Image (tube, rainbow, N blue to C red; front, side):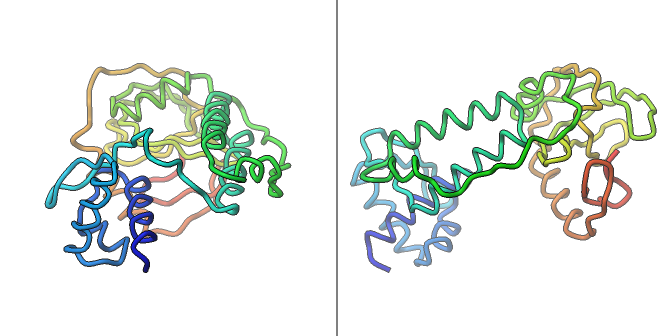
Length: 247
């Protein structure tokens, strides 16, 4: 691989992977030896890239506005536009608006003929929005609880119509054409649960952080999920998690 291409690929990996990224992972992603990886990091830093971190810990890329604009292939541009359009169908209004604004900023910084290519995209989503009950709770507050790793108490009506009060650790949201689901670790049931967001009648922050537990919980969820098939449930196909599932 040419040196310039290798450095561009390294920058792309630093942008794409969750920081900090270890030297071993960067070397694997760019197909170079660890020694070459350290030299490439030094070259990027000398060229103006703001890369924090060190060997044995991991690296974090701090974007520098003085650096040249990021370039995309035509297919990558069309893929991004199609993804933004799909949010009008499966996302909420706030998320769709944020995606359009972000895409507009990306297009404005594209070099050469790429802004014109974005205006003449050939890939479009003409699917109509699904018919589903809108959430009662504030989705922005729910997203913040997931980001901030803050425990919640929710009032929930399950698929059998039973009303319960749950204390949960919200881990993430799953969007689809048919449903919006909340993955959480239910502290009432002490197990993973997938909650239909439109069945949550009330949500109250508990003022409790579960930050130290998030990473091991997500690791355990992925491990369990890989062991069980997917089945059809209310609102679409949901993963079977041992004794858990869509509720």
